[in-house]
Image 1 (cartoon, rainbow, N blue to C red):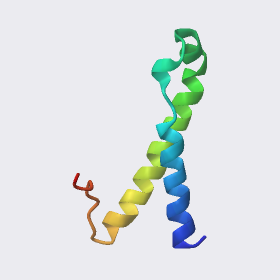
Image 2: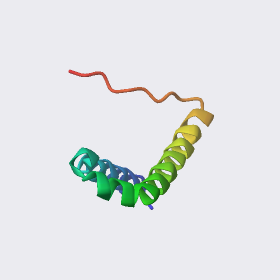
Image 3: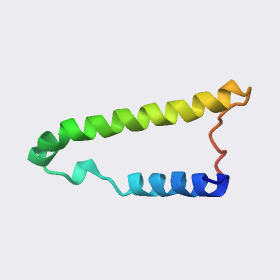
Image 4: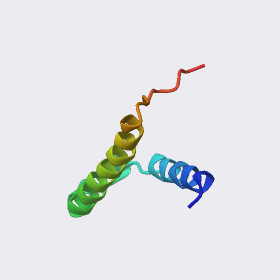
Length: 68
């Protein structure tokens, strides 16, 4: 996968996550899907940590963009 493809896929994942609003889910739905949601969130956390660790291992810092 090219660098451009990787960044595009990461951007797409961010866009997809922005569309998730668990506050709009009913209590019942959230309880029913909590196990699956937890699994996905933990996998996402692990994947993001792996990428961030790879950047840091090369001596670089990950910084939040400064708001305009």
